[in-house]
Image (cartoon, rainbow, N blue to C red; front, side, top):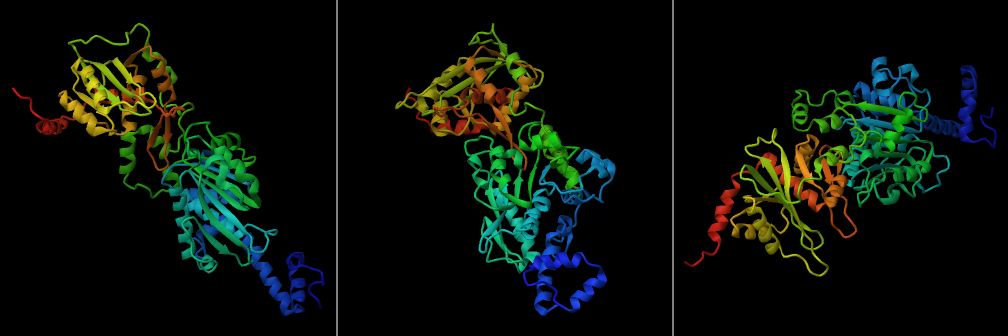
Length: 545
């Protein structure tokens, strides 16, 4: 008995068998040739591999051999259109927006996950999903010698390479995947040769300008890691460009995953997908607000890390640990309302010195393309940094001209004279041309004090503005610069303060100087800086009497 007709494909053999009863299958197989049995074996392997569930891939000792948290297992099941078995209805309602029975029974092409940092969303979801897709996604039209790609795009190449390192580790430990590895992994890719002979690369890229990170590939998978933080080299958000580049290149049966700690509510493609699909999962499986502990219950068992982060920066802790997006509009570091409330039309541009007030100076030196700026803030006498009120007493700016840069020593000496007119003797600044600045200040019996991080200074200024404790004179350039300051949360925690550069290269000189004066006024500078002052004074030439 001939098992297959002469023009039948090996693919049709499995279809024939699956349509038969068990008895019919046994009878047909008894008459099969060895060639037909081999074809059936290959087809059965392909069938089983392509139907391998993601959760099984994660847990099986043949592949990743991971012990999953209930929430990671639930996300893996739901991504395959399988009813999760590790969480209850209340948990499903909280993170999926619907009951377990309300989750889709067919896998969605796009999966969107908003989750806390350090919970394993890259190591236990995105990286192994890239391998799973590379191993299982059907590729019937891939030409001989052509490579398909499972692509991971991250906000930064460092994080992308970290994701690849997770993939390499899983492959090297997996009995099934280890033998399929072609050559040695590079720093940006590895290649698997599947049992069906198809070649698939797992590659990593950083989010690049105009979506270039995802172009020109036949994709079985696209994974966007820390998707809310996709910026090109100039600081422009490019998450939509990356999405447009990758989505149409994903083959049938492949998936696109976007995974990130949250940023600002309603801002970006991930937020749009969550808003449109959370609870209904019409086109995208949407998972929202999965905190670090929900994703990884073993994180920070004593609670010390979380307690410290909530003390020092509660907003960032809510975002990074609690997976709570900042409220809409938070991309601007200072609220528009607080900025407008601070400007007082009747306040003079330069205040007279008062014997009953203290004065604090901060600056932002620039000598070639950027301006040098000095801000002096007046504070109530004896302020404790919390209850006092403050006014901008002086805002001075010196601009270089083309071909005529400013001289650091001259600018610093002029600024010192202005400071001394208010009785201020400490100039809080950055390290730019610090030796020339320090020498000029010391010659005037003033000290140049290195400021803390920009984020710390801007937080001090924001506190004063948002609490209504700082008054500013009308100043269009300062108002504009305050409005332009952006806060960019960084993957892994922390916040980067960003003042957009202008066409001439200048960026936020006035507001930077004001932020340092505000920090100086509320925190005060360490008196230990005067040890350095005395040492430098000793090295100065003595005047002849």
